[in-house]
Length: 92
Image (cartoon, rainbow, N blue to C red; front, side, top):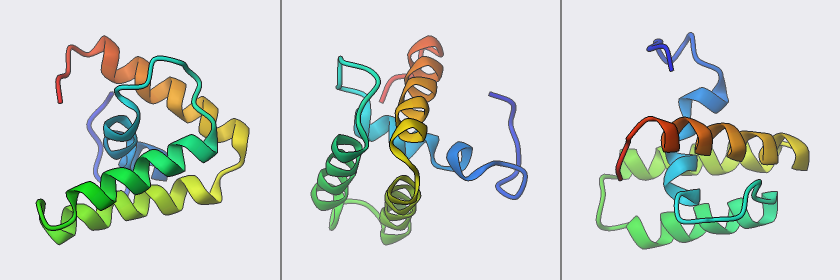
């Protein structure tokens, strides 16, 4: 992924890491919107009090973005994010 400033990134690109953290252990792709929402909710709940509130805010923004997307867009996003991070030798 080409490095961009936040203002140059789409909303999806700006929150792809948060989405990846939520879906990284899932084996079946694409992931339905309802499950992505659940995974983000669990991630936020489990990380609250452990990580900085600014980081929690980024997860909450990612969740809000997913909530506003339609089902097919969410499925496409999960495929794109998984392909990017799985192919990039990136470890959580």
